[in-house]
Image 1 (cartoon, rainbow, N blue to C red):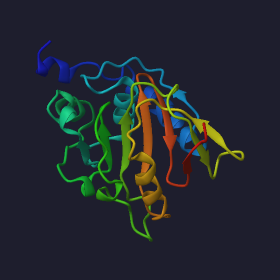
Image 2 (cartoon, rainbow, N blue to C red):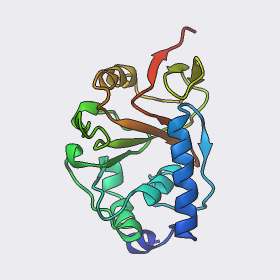
Image 3 (cartoon, rainbow, N blue to C red):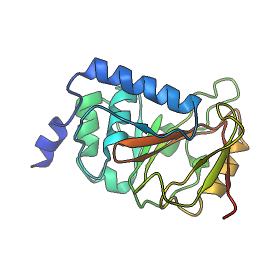
Length: 202
């Protein structure tokens, strides 16, 4: 399949219905951090963009939202696919991006390079979507904060070592800061900026 064909296919079969269901799932995920959600719509985004990440992009991105992509995604058919299905333009500037997508195995840059909103408009920040090999079976992390009854655990596989330090720096900006969605295949888990994340003792 050529890049052109790849960019034109693989979107939502029923855009409004599917976008609404995924948006509700994302809101639920942000309200209950650490809860693994599975997307229903069967889409086929160009590799290396995963199904859940692609579904989130189709749901949240439009012609008014600048999107930043890691180099692996930027060199694929993903920019054209996003442009065709959502109208979203791609930016090279992290600080201008409303949404950012990283494929599995990418080193994380400082979250401070993305838009963190302002004190008056903390929602004007970047949501960063990070693809991982699996969302269960990795190093266990404890989550605490709003929407979590005492503590919940997640154990994403191959989360970069720098993640906890970067997240602590992000938490210090509250109410500013980025929100993160970890994805793997058809599944995702939300980590809003209100969540405190620590490594659990083995």
